[in-house]
Image (cartoon, rainbow, N blue to C red; front, top):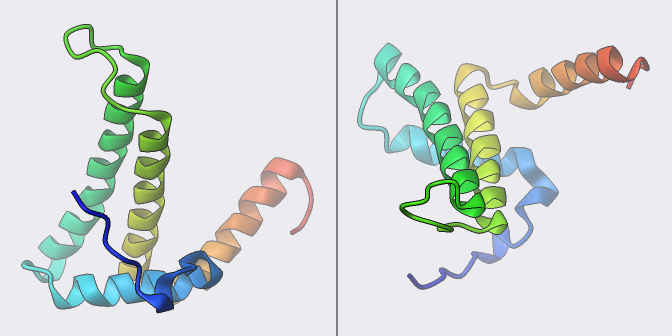
Amino acid sequence: MTEQAIPPAYDDPAADLWAGINDLWTWLDANRPVDGQEGLLLRILKLSEEAGEVAEAVIGATGQNPRKGVTHTWDDVQAELCDVVITALIVLRTLTPDTREVFARHLARVMERSLGQPS
């Protein structure tokens, strides 16, 4: 598989994570084969699929399947974890246009609860 060139506007998508998530959500929404409640549920289920791919990569990186041996690298695990994060943020964007604010409020609550300090 050949690597695709990254469009100049996306050479550092982490610089504007939320714009990138919104762009991906817009693209997915325009190209989804199923609308409505069923489409929403399928998008949420996609998160489970991505988490399963993390598990598959960890098993492959550690060679836990003796029939297959080592089939993945820890770089593969990192990539799959990134897919989980992206998918989760797109699902959150599907549920609310206020994705950034909802996430920031929740992160602040988790940080306060876990670290014992307001963020």
